[in-house]
Length: 212
Image (cartoon, rainbow, N blue to C red; front, side, top):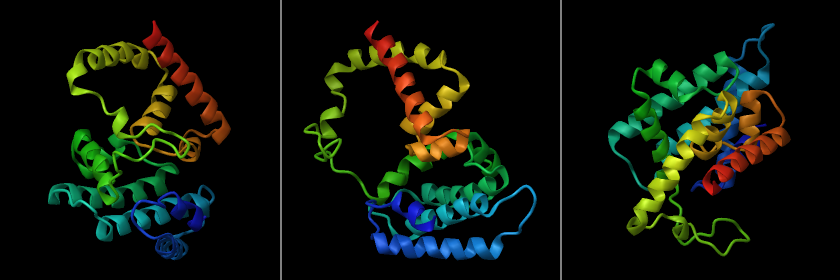
């Protein structure tokens, strides 16, 4: 479990073996802190504990581009609150739950989470996928064509608003929070295959809205 969690952060600027070691530390802390009970299981407690340890390591040692001190401090608070909330909720907390626990606006939580890319910035020349000839920079909107961008955004807005609550959550977790399908599946209580099918259906709805 520790190695599997560590591998989710592989390629972000920290060596894989170092990630494993940090995850093992989190596992030991989980063993030491876990108290068995009828409503809890070790995995539900250990998962956020190990993940929190990995995120703290990134926060303290892995900056490639250092953001403002306010963002750094907020990320530290988020990291601590995430582990506590996840252990109690038995799922990863939402932005609003984090904001309520820390006592800051949701917008500040989002700012801090966007800055996570400072650990290992991606080159604009990097391909979108291993087998793709399209670069990340090629997908950046052209500032000269802002009308088309605004038109697409305004077309998508009502389509997204018409989605069900679960579909909205899945879309946010995948496209905004960049969660893996496995993490989404764990939160909403379905299989990873079901998440893949739900995402395909949601994207089909949005593509239809754009085409129309």
